[in-house]
Length: 159
Image 1 (cartoon, rainbow, N blue to C red):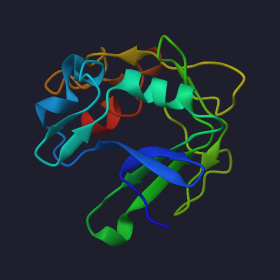
Image 2: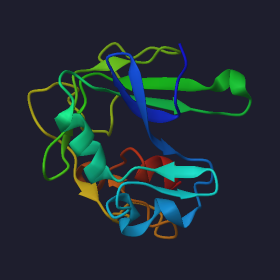
Image 3: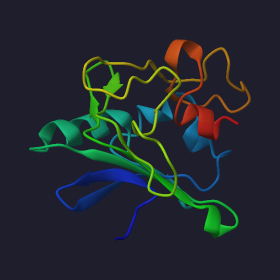
């Protein structure tokens, strides 16, 4: 089975949402996460804005999995995180129904951020258009930050 770097998996098909090659690219900072008007590419980096993610999920009939493919050096250290039945609400909070870590062990599924309950019972996450208080202000990375704790995107790109 082939994997995209980061994307939505729906009924066997994939939609590429992001490709992070250069974490210092200005594409990954400020309000670019929300304001790319569909998609934006700079060199090999690619991003579909977060509101378009939400619309793609909402218009799909059935569960949608969010798949992260993390490329490492050496490539034998590459790994994948799969968030089952990933959803976003209108304020960009998220929830998902567990998931899997095919190259490792995560019995309840991967956590999107430190306070992720990994259930569909409640919406979590605070989408920030800029780095929050605990992140590296030099990168100004957008993403989800739980109570200004580490989260996805901002945590990965902002370090």
